[in-house]
Length: 475
Image (cartoon, rainbow, N blue to C red; front, side, top):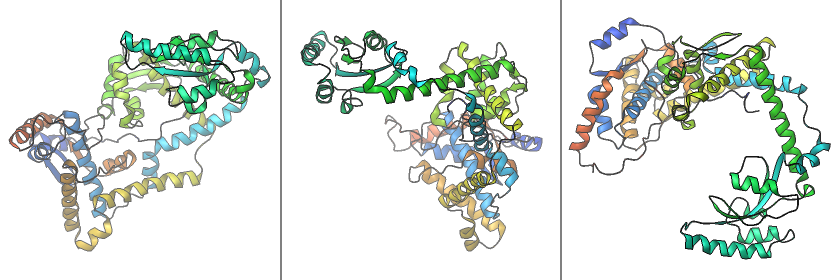
């Protein structure tokens, strides 16, 4: 299942209002962030960044500040011997994991009525080209000059004169420059129409089973294509046909779910959608309506919550930023569909078993202890080194600062405080971030770097801190 699967990674940050913290910040514009009675001054962050090889960009500064908050909050919990073992809060924080379980159970139930295509019709489907199978011999054309291409063309023309159905696989293994298919005798397996580049797709579709194409040119080079007999690919083709039929049934089900629940995306929301995707945390309380359904309003805050289930490497923000406005309604509809699927699962009382809940909770607590160990703030080690709570908190904070210095100088690996753990920590302990100070931080960091012995023209390596999507401010 693909479309019905809810992303497991991450969950939304929780924010509560506190005007006093906001007022306090207005009087301390030289403070970038506060967490667990600790302050991150502009000068401290500027020194960390200016003395490191981290790119002097606002998104990198945001990532470092976010990590600083996470580390001090989890160190605070360690100093207080707070294991965060509140099942209700853990379950709320692990909502994406639980949602996955619900969606999978609902899918298993509803898909029982979906009928896979009749395998007795597979050969007819293969012969009419509704799905294709092909093998090929590819000679690449890295030298795109006329002389270079002509040399490759001459070689593949010679191969074409030798090849037949009996020796195709052997010649493909010896000559094809496609590393993926050559070891398999040139086989590309079974694939739907349109999956290959246009020239290849058209040439393969024009062949009858058992036929071999003339030399075909694509952007990659020159190909000789063979369409196998049905008997050669029967097993793979039947499996692919049935999988495709189930995918079609799934798409039909989701389309029906959307229609039955009157899903509509509001017009003129493209800018709002892009803003949420670029900076989910700042839209956690945004009630802007992006879509409606029988469940009610789907708001910017709802989209922000879903966005935080994607890891940074998914690069969703970059993809949405470059996508045309016409695709954004479908992007939002996918999340509304997720909500409808989860509502259906809840209505059917399909939820995690006690064992599954226990496993999710164990996963959460394991990430807490792993972070403590990696940051050298394990409660037992703190208790052994400091008797009073105040001393333990001071020691834990110092160890966090020592670690950050090593991290930014690339002497330590990044410690990930997972999104669910952040949820619980940021809901339980006070913190705040003042993004308005970052311009000042970057200016001072640039001065420090220019004054250092490092070569300013050297290429900057990637940041050692994974970059979250947004600035966050807890009020």
